[in-house]
Image 1 (cartoon, rainbow over the protein chains, first blue to last red):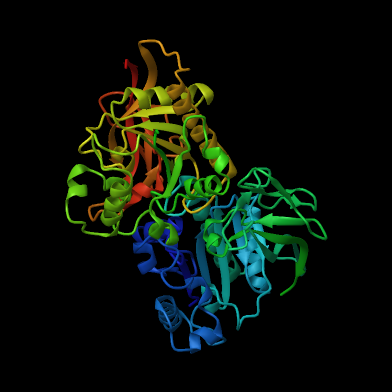
Image 2 (cartoon, each protein chain N blue to C red; image 1 turned 180 degrees about the vertical axis):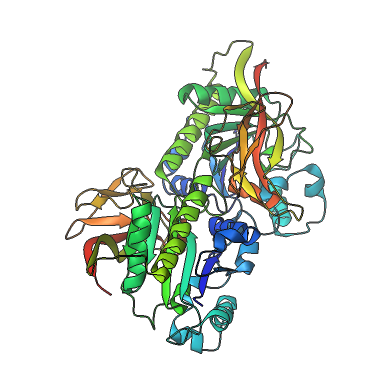
Length: 293
Length: 293
């Protein structure tokens, strides 16, 4: 029997996934498909109770092989080991086939489907969901499984649904409903794949965005933030940003232009969770990706 | 010499005011007017460092006469006493003439000018700022001075600038600039008033919104939230809500209609800070207020 786990509350102040998990737990038919019944997990209930992303360390950075094999140094590392014991263990012998992890962002990223490893089946899932929800974006990262520290890396296949904009600590129906729809299509994909009803071409292709680097907000010598995202760039996730265009605005009102060697695309523009490192946005490359089984 | 104090960080995760205070501190000319130089205060630096509204208790509910005279029971109550010693003491002998306190909300409330007591001069300020910034809304509360527990109640005159929508923990230029403009006009008002250049009619009047009550989000028997603001009502702050119109939507998708004895106006629709009490919105009356000196 295939094991499918849906996770919410990996970040304790991203209420949308938590609320959706509670709805699914209350009405189990939404978890059922022909070939499986999905399980659910609220990953970081301590952080949820405190309405914080995490208490000691971002739980979604605690699932590398190294951290899972070390003695835990804080509450999230302990929790990662518990989850890995219950649903892993990470690696070829994991008992879980799929983990679908539900996230939100304060950035205007719409429905973003995140595939974090070079996994053809997860890419197939992303492509399937994107076809059902035109406008959804595929965000691709080519992490090595052993060092991949995301929760969903303990399953054979991992998939993140990231919806925004929604402020931390609150619920919006639009984000909730987008998350529910994307999840439902992802479960449908697993069912269709198991039933052999998916007739995929031998070579699949999609336009995807791939993370390259994060940029800091403007800071003074002491590290204090002294500016913010330029209003022309605010809410422009997945748009192109060319050298010479406005990127930041200082508290004084002075515009800072983007200095770079090439045009890029942007995402996680003004994500509140990244202020602890004073990161203002992520830069992305747009790639036309092709893959086979 | 008149004493004017501008406060940010009363709520530690409302970064806009904090950032504006830092800008003002770096460039003192913005604090200067003909008749005074305003002072600045970052009220709850412990909460700011933790990116939380407060640590133990909302600081902006710690300035009632009773709490200020009691032995402090937590960190915010201690901090309130410190602020009251430095800038009060609350009552007729306070050393501070004006406190202007900078806040943000996750609700779509634009520029809201909050007057919390029946104070003609504060109402004059609100009316002056509103004339400079058409679209700004005056929010009026008729609190008794002794039980008024807001920070600005320790000055002779208090004024709150509340700007939204902006997510907790992040900066947006639109909110920052709206706050800066409203503050600048408020300082201009004090200067004009001191110079005798204000020629106000003997009877002033304005349309204001007055708080009546908060409504809970839908909850189950155990108190868990099981719904959210209806999408038709989301972002509709200061609009009319009539009995029979959609107010909430349950996790299941079922619409809840507004049951009430009269039409009302709404504000603080989906304010993240009110989830700790599971409050979803505030109801308001629209009043045509008249006042004299």
